[in-house]
Every structure is written in C-alpha cells, then in structure tokens.
Image (cartoon, rainbow, N blue to C red):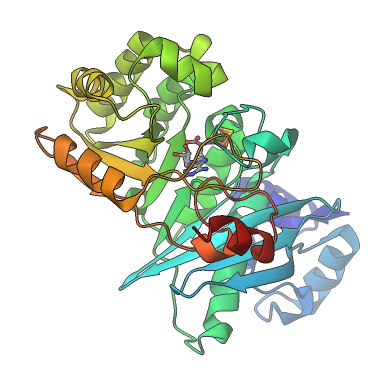
Length: 355
Ligand code: SAH
Ligand code: SF4
C-alpha cells in the first residue's frame, strides 16, 4: 500500500494512467490531499467512483498523528507528532501579526552534535521523507484553524529550523519545498521559505542551483575557526573560509540576502575579538545578523545571557553597517524555542528556564 502523499504530481500521474484514468486527474488528487487536507479517498468527489475504488486498493492518504500540543503564553504553539514508525518529531507555530510561520523538523534527532543544541544531544535516528516535512505545515494549519476558530487562517511562512540539519537531507527537503510552494498544494511563496544550515558547504552550492528562490540562513555562532569548531563539530570539515565562498556564491546566484544566525553564548563568543572576527566575516556579504540568546535546557553546557549582556552585544553590533535583529524567543515556556526541540516536557522546561 502506497501513501499517496509520498508521490509527486508526476508519480501520481503515472499511477492514474496505470488504472486507466487521464494523467491530469493527478492534480485533482494532489489538491484534495495538500490543499484541502482530505484523507478519505471517498471524499474526493470529482474522481469517479470506479477510480476511487481502484485507488483504495492501491494505497491511502497518510498523515502525521498529533500526539500533543503545548500553547505558549506568547501565542506560539509547539506540536508533538508521531510518525508511522512510532518515532516522534516536533513543529512550532509562530504567529506575528499577519505572518503565520511554521518551524519544521527535517530529521528525527540530528547527526551534527552541536554543543549548544538540545536536538543535537539526542543523536540521530533518521531522515524525514518529504511528505513528513510538508505534512507538518498542513497539520499545523488544520489544527490552528479550529483551535483559533479561524477557518481562513493560512500559514504564510515556513522556516526549516526545527529538529535536524536540512542540508544533509536535501533531496527530501527540496521535494517538500515543491509541495509547500505548489499552487495546488500549500501555496506558500518560495521567498517566504527559509532554510537554515549549520554550514554544510556542498549543500549550499546545491541549494544555490535549486529552482526555488528560498532564503538561506547560516548558523554562524562564531567567526573564529578554532572556536566555532569547538561548538560545531562539522566546522572542522567545512571551515569558515570555504563556507564564506559558498555563501557568496549563493547570494550571487539567488540575489537573496543571507541571514546569519549568531547564538549569544555569554563568556564564549561575545568579546571584542569575537565581534571583530564577525565583522570581517560578514563584510561585503549582503546580509543581516540575527542574534539568538542561548536558550537553556536540562543538562545544557552554557547559560542564558542576561538582558544586560544581550543589550551590550546588540549595541556593539549596531556599529556594523548590517541590520541586526534580536530573535525574540517565542515559545520558551513550552520548550518550542530554538534548540529546545528535543522532547523536554514543558514542566521540566519551565523549571529550568525560570531564572
Ligand atoms: N540545523 C539547522 C537548523 C535547525 S537549528 C541549523 O543548525 O541551522 C535552528 C537554529 O536554532 C540554529 O540557528 C541553531 O543554532 C539554533 N539553536 C540551537 N540550539 C539553540 C539553543 N539552545 N538556544 C538558542 N538557539 C539554538
Ligand atoms: Fe543539528 Fe542544527 Fe542542532 Fe546543530 S544546531 S545539532 S545542526 S539541529
């Protein structure tokens, strides 16, 4: 039995042809699944009864199972989904005025083992399939419509910043972007999709060649090679000088501004020397710098910066010609904030972050 959501339009067309239907019916099925969120083949009323019966013999429309949700005081909601093999992943809904963003996971765990990341401390279980990535957005949209009683609510933005590293699961990530972007799918503009990477150089080149204008965010955290390698193990294989070239190439190809994510780890990467290295690294790259205060989690090696430390760091960065933003940590009280997506239950998190 095949899950029809795992098929792209072309494969669905092949399937329709194999049961004696015209290929163009594939887009009707695609629309039912990805636009309307229907899972029952019987509900696909513009498909003939005969074809529907055949489809039911061949497969089904799968969906992620919502196991739990954790609404935060700030309006964001963290979701725990169960996959067909029983593994669990997390997604986050982040509202900001007209913008409704979903942060999606791309892997169960993450193989990169960054020293400041709760997901990284989990280890790696498996890659997600493209439909499992795109379905997070569909399920969150469906849930939020009824939760907020807003039947017209639409997800406008997607960020690949949940569990896992998108550029080591790039084939499935690209397919999921096609589904999100499709006008008979979720219809999310490719410019409203951001892929965040820890700095996988071959993946950046490949994404530069990808035929969708997605935004690239690079998790820099330190512009000093030896320091970065201490907290981002993969930086040894993909050093900063080569990373910089790949990022410039991305900009040249896409003409899209880069976002640098800089985790503020007090006492580790916020000295004058760190800032000067950062200044050198970003100079000449059309980009903005997004400062992320470290979010602690049980067993974390770093502490959260104080408000004063954050303010001082931002003030100093504002001397750069670049736009500097501070990421307001949404969903912190329910463990939905960056780097906390690791199945820590909200109660544990509330205990740990109350300082
Ligand atoms: N693997 C990708 C995308 C997922 S991580 C990447 O690393 O970019 C998304 C963002 O959350 C990254 O910028 C990451 O560095 C940041 N992050 C990880 N752990 C964090 C923590 N404990 N506090 C705050 N941000 C964290
Ligand atoms: Fe993986 Fe990103 Fe976490 Fe590093 S920061 S362990 S790449 S999810």
